[in-house]
Length: 77
Image (cartoon, rainbow, N blue to C red; front, side, top):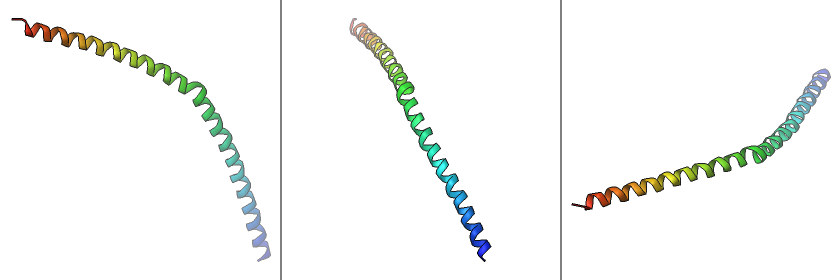
C-alpha cells in the first residue's frame, strides 16, 4: 500500500506541476492577447467605424436631398 501512496503522490505532483505551467502560460498568452487587441485591433476598429459612419452620413444626406426633391416635384402641378 505504501508504494501505491507514493505513486499517487508522484502523479499528483506531476499533475499539479502541469496545471501550474499551463496556468502561467495562459496568463502570459492572455496578457499578450489583451495587449494586441488594445494596440492593434481597437484603433483599427475605431478608424474603420468612423469612416463607415461618415459614408453612412453622406448617403443619408443624399437620400434626404432626394426625398426633398421628389416631395417638391410631387407638390408642383
